[in-house]
Amino acid sequence: MLMSDKSNEEKQVEFFKVFNPSEDLKLQTKIGQVGGLDTNMNGNLVVFHRGSRVWQFDSFMGNNFNKNKYKAIKENTLTLIDVKKSEEIFSWGANRFYMPHGLTIDFDNNIWVTDVALHQVMKFNPRNLEEPELVLGVEFKPGNAENQFCKPTDVSVSETSGHVFISDGYCNHRVVEFDKSGHFLGVYEDKKHPLQVVHSVALVEKLNLVCTVSRQDDSYGFTFYADESRFGQFKQRWNSLERDLEGVHDIALSPDGSAIYLGQLNGEIDEFTYE
Image (cartoon, rainbow, N blue to C red; front, top):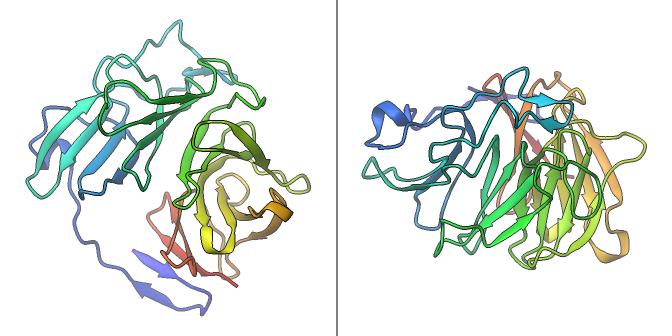
């Protein structure tokens, strides 16, 4: 795997470990297509997957999920794994989700997931994983109102304020901010250069910035201001000067906010230093 930076140097990155969850770990649950994954504060891995569901050409009719043909996924779709012991701790989510997509664990160990078929975002408290503590969006009803999404893709949660930032997503071309109770606060979008598939979102809290990546915009990254005086204003659009980015799927930041990492579907990771 190669990592490139603005110095135009390429660095070799070694894989620490690669495994097939269903074959290499002692799991009762068969892991399907992985929509999202994250580690909790105990170091355990949570995987949000699609079980037996596969995203097909007829899964959606426009922006609406084909629920007449495809029912809720019958298997558990959220699996908590103790990787050190190579065993499953707990699984849940059967008969609840239709097309799992993104998963984020916040600083209080809450689990946030997005389902692009339901057009919803759910928060699970670690003390009660069976039922969501908070649900945002209207079930099976895509839209761009304050309480609606259209195929939301990812979630990022502020450590300082608890505010929730949702990349929305495949059709609304925006990032939406809510407070920790789920009340709408505002929208981040670029009117001049509309985002296409807003696939992932990350925060640079010390700089009051929201970063996102749009998978279909020749894989450009976008940055917005998040402070009160410039709330939601577009700051900049960025891409690699050395080569084109293709199929960017996720975005992550270094802890100090000095570097932005883009993960691509071709297995490469690009690093950008923030100026």
